Length: 505
Image 1 (cartoon, one colour):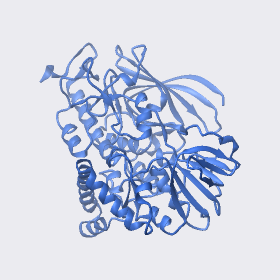
Image 2 (image 1 turned 180 degrees about the vertical axis):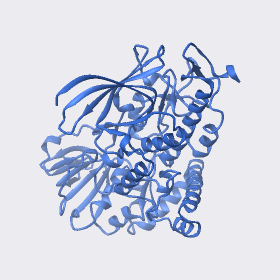
Image 3 (image 1 turned 135 degrees about the horizontal axis):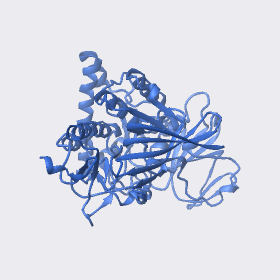
Image 4 (image 1 turned 30 degrees about the horizontal axis):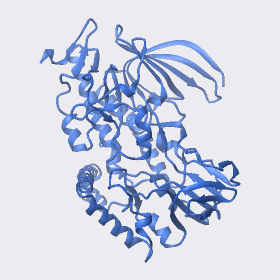
């Protein structure tokens, strides 16, 4: 790839980085509610969709219902509440077309560097633009605000631990994040390493249709909670028939928001009872005499890590039918024909899938500079879950970990709109949260999952109380983000000088 540097400066009000579900949602809100603002959406890849375009492994689907994972302004009309990736991509594409900004998405635009000038009150973005042939040029875009909807993991590589003897294996090794086009697994023995949502999705998916695998084994070191959920929400269908598309969708969305919150609260407050209920469902769906406690009894409480979903119990069905099994053990090494385990058992495999997780990274790895000094985002605190201390005019989209991601993003966008309107009304150009020195902190993603623990050293921090604590529920954020847009922690600036937000109260 060749790189050619050009000087082309464009001035915008808001740059949205990322055309996944967060970026497309933000673009819709902003173009509707801030019609006087100039907006562009920069997408580093060649297509919209983010996660839903990147991942191509068998069965890729949502792990949340689309009545809450979808947008509040656009009803989800497909009968499947748990939806496959191609349906979600169609939904996102329709959103861009219906709201008239499909042509505003600039594909193959990767932001390399973002530099803030307090004197000019503007971000200068260095953007690499690549044409279909692979030729790249560098351009410059200036923007008053940046809304980073980049997700939280590296698109270039997934996480794979070191496995001894990997080079000895005679078959094919695949990571779900880089699934090869046309991979033929028909009639083959497949071992999937991992027990997260990806593995739980792939096991039944690889056993469907004419190209089905001969057998699939999910090899896990530690069990995961797996709960069954109907793929079709019958209540949603009834509400839609009774109330119409829009009102039925709104009613279903409200129902599911509260139902989901109730389930999380119950499981966290009564973990023993929750564990018993999940186990009882597992026992009912698995073959008689199956060792449920060995393979489906995690050493942690429900929602210390994310629960995995099995739509209509499909994961358990293929185990019951003998097409798949679960092995709980530790890997000693790969062998020419499979995997040797600590117990002495050897798993035969033609294909090994390393569904071992993600490498976390915010903002696509771009360099962030404030007044000539590189910024370490790990030293910043998240303000109201979306602004970062010490970084002016910068918002980020991070959704919930115990609920549908998009629920939080919708509240963030509404807060952002209110903030823009407040700043315009008072003549402010700059907004930056200021954290107290030595404030107590904890990781911004409050989960015990492996990817969350590994990624904590790359992410901002959160405090222990509002407005620095990341709220865990839609209900809590609905109050915090729909209330007053400022407090004593948020500092505003004009073209001439900066002053505390409370000065005009």
